[in-house]
Image (cartoon, rainbow, N blue to C red; front, side, top):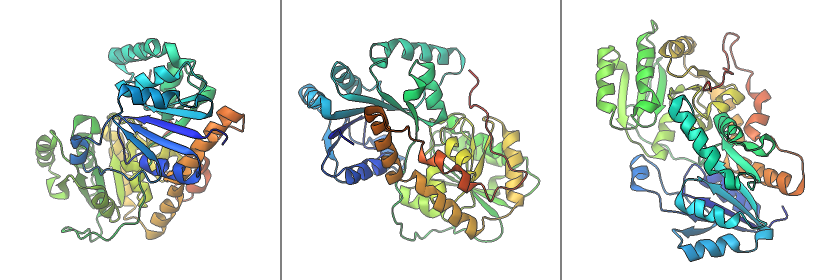
Length: 397
C-alpha cells in the first residue's frame, strides 16, 4: 500500500473493531495508524459487559480539541487515508468536512439506518440531502451488512465503491470458566445474548418455543434490560419458564464460556445493524438462527452454519427450531468445522481485506471480495437436505 498514514475517526474504542485495527497496525509496520476517538467507552457499554479493548501498536488520540482535529486532518493529505465511522457524530462530521477539500483518500464506515415506514423514508431523504456536499467526495464505503450496502446505494453512493463490511469480535485464548449450571444431558442447549429490549425479539423466541411439541431443549438468556420482568412473566404465561434461565449480564469471557457449552444461538431481532454475538457464536463453533433483519445474517447465509428466518414471525422461527432440536445436540466434529470457517471473520482477515479495498480504490488493483463471502463454498457440507439459507431481502422498501 503506497499511502503511509491511515486515520480512523470513531466514536469510541469498540471491541467489535479492535481486532482488525490492531492487526492492521501489525501488518503495516512502518506506516502511521491512528485512532481518533470522540470519547472513552461509556458506562452504559461497560454495564452491558463490554470491556475496553487493547489497540496494540496504534496511536490513539482521545477527545481531541478543534486545533488537534484540524492538525491531524490536514497533515500530509497526499499520503493519508481517512476512514470515518459514524457520520452523525460531531467530531467525525467536523473532521470529514475539513478533509473533504484535500487530496486525502476518504472512506466511510457505517451501518444502515432503518428505512421502513414513513419515518424510514424521512431518514433516507435526510441522509440523501445532508450528505450531498461530500457524497461524491467519498472514495469508498465500508457498509455494515447487506442492509448497509443497500442503504448507501439508495443514498446515492456508487455501488462500485461500496464494499461489504461487518463487525469483528476478539478471538483470544480463553481460560475455562466455572459455572453453577453446566449444561448436561440430552437437551439441546439454546442461547440468546443481548439486551432485554423489544428490538431484540426475545418475546418472539419465547412464543416460538411455546409452539413446539418437542421438549428436549433448554434456553439460556444472557443479558438484562427494562423488558426482563415482562419477559419472565411471559415465559410463565407460555408455560416454558422451567426450561428458561435468565442469567443477567455477563462479560465477554463469560459469554464465550457459556457458548462453549451451547448447541444453538438464536438472535430473533426485529432489527439489528449487525449483531456481534453471531460472530462470537461462530468462533465458538455454534450454529446460528437469526432474523433476516440482522446485518450478521450475511455470516449465517455465507457460512451455511445456521439459518435465517423471517423477522417478527414466531411461526417461521418455531418451524426451524423444531427441526434443529429434533436433530439433537451439536456434534463436536461440526463445532470444529464451524470454528475452522470462522478464521475468515477474525481481525487479521478483515485487516487484509481492508488493505485490498484501499489498494483497489487508490492504485487500481483488482476489486476484493469480503473473506466471509469468499469462503462460502467450503461451509455447506453439513447442511441437511431440508435446511435452507434464506435469501430474501431483510426489509421491503
